[in-house]
Amino acid sequence: MVPSDPPAPPLRRRGARLRSAVLAATVDVLTEHGLAGTTVGAVARAAGVHETSVYRGWGTRENLILEALSEQADAALPVPDTGRVRDDLAGYFGTLARLLATPQGEALLRLSAERDDTLPDRRLPYWTDRLDRATVMVRRAVDRGELPPDTDPVLLVEALAGPLFTRALISGAPLDETLATRLVDLVLDGASAPKPGA
Image 1 (cartoon, rainbow, N blue to C red):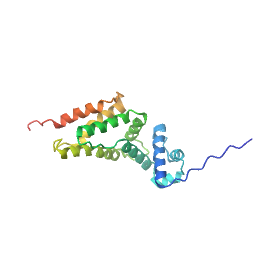
Image 2 (image 1 turned 60 degrees about the vertical axis):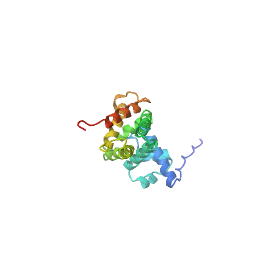
Image 3 (image 1 turned 30 degrees about the vertical axis):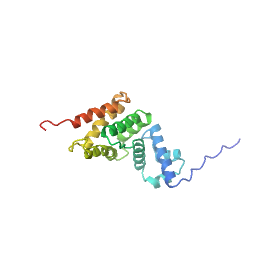
Image 4 (image 1 turned 120 degrees about the vertical axis):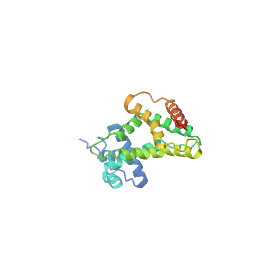
């Protein structure tokens, strides 16, 4: 009987290559196996690195998952700067809608919104960071005079993101190509309308 070959030893990755491999593997494992199946061991195997290297780099499973989710969302959602708030927001939320329409994007949204008793609740910091990136577009528009000075950037971004998240997480209604543009028109028209008594 011929003995089978032993499993290949983990690759000796360091620095940026190790970080990139581990974060990519984390997203893959999250998408395929969900939060419960995303262990440090599973990620290390998928990345082809030693488990101790993952612990050394991230300390905890929680830190690893949060960094992977944050990096994936930020890489997929660059903040445009076209000089017009309507174009910026339509581009950004159109990209978000396309991301959420993919299996991976839906999984990332569900995982970042999911409450897991084995992890401290870090959803608020996660979504605060994502909203802060998007509000830059609104703040620039206020500075350019495109929107009134009393515009609430966080509320405006939430008004745009909310319907997309509702469709992805709850209703299952389609995230079609025109939805983001229609939402931007609706919200900006409301934000720019004269206030009663003004």
